[in-house]
Amino acid sequence: MKSNNFYISSVSITDYKSIQEVEVELDDSLAIIIGPNGAGKSNFLEVLNHIGYNQILFPRGLNNVPRNLSYSVTFKRNSKEKVKEVILSISPTTNLKDKNNEFLSFNVTVIMKSEGEDNKELTFNTSNEEDTQTKLIEIRKEVRPLLNNFVRFIKYNFDYNSVFLSKPQSYIFNKRNETIDAKEKIDGSLFLLRYLNLRYQFSMDDEITDIITSEGTVDENLIIENKIREILLTEFNDTINESVREDFATYSPIKDIRLSKNINVNLNEDNIIISNIIMEFNVNDDWVPWDWLSDGTKRLFYIISEVSLTYGGIILIEEPELGIHPHQLHILMDYIKSKSTNNQFIISTHSPQVLNCLKPNELEKIIISKMSQNGSTFRHLNEVEIKKANVYMKEVGYLSQYWLHSTLEDEND
Image 1 (cartoon, helix red, strand yellow):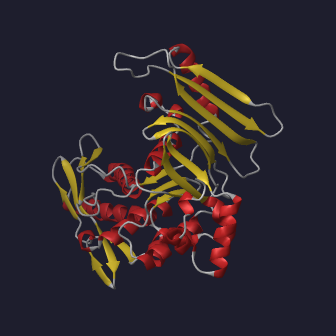
Image 2 (spheres, one colour):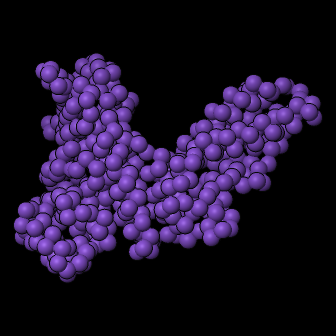
């Protein structure tokens, strides 16, 4: 990762679902986890998603820690900034449990390593509320600005009936209180929709308040209507900007995105009601609604919209191949590879074709997951395995074929 942001360099996890105890090093740009069903790939991504949000850096964050989970994660960055490394460790206090055998407190350690300076360490147990609050204030002041990565967890599915997509959004602006509310709840899994919704609410709240009067004339009402339409279009184009549109046009069947022209603005004595705000998509030279898109195209929209709005972030993708044509998957992996320059991607997959994005000198990015008597295990290819794979790629064919026709996942047994 070339950005100044931190990436997850290594992580050790204890007691999370199928994971009893593992330690894994991660590449700063791309890691691809392969392995059979039930090997723990999704569980591993779930823990990384939890870690990535840096719960101790946010209010009430420790209340959301899974009660048996212990982890230690090392964040690093490739930059000239002073602080080079942050280690965050959380473990439950084994002697403090409630009647349901759930842990009541955690030991927390944060270590910051800076070039040319002694390490700074903060340690506390959450059972001591006064000490916890003091340490959390210090951690949030010093560490939170450092670990400001956006974390995206792109799961294998999401709510296809989301607002702005299959259902129109509506807003009600109360003229007396000068407040605006969204009618529909936004699907939390899509950052683009959450971001667009927030921009709409903030912009309309500020702009409409500036021009509103308690008793509008026809002319004033027309000014408000035109202003609202202008706000909607401006915020939409600023969110789905030229760079985002180019990503869609290059790497998916979606060649352009626009707001429907049929937006309604109704004014009465108390409220301004803005309704029928919904997207349309240009596919095969025709503008169509979301429901007309194929499941594979919807999946591509989900992945590309999340990735295109992320810079210097950690992006977790669960089975990117689902519902996507093999040729389109090849294009998608080229896209992910191109974006890994400034983001860290950690992907789980059952598709051999996903591995074809790797060059012979990049096979250390592969992580093999397997279930053992001691729970889920995760390991990199060893030197012998990498050499055998490289010989196959040079003399026979693609890495995907090697995975299919070799004992790649079992060679270290």
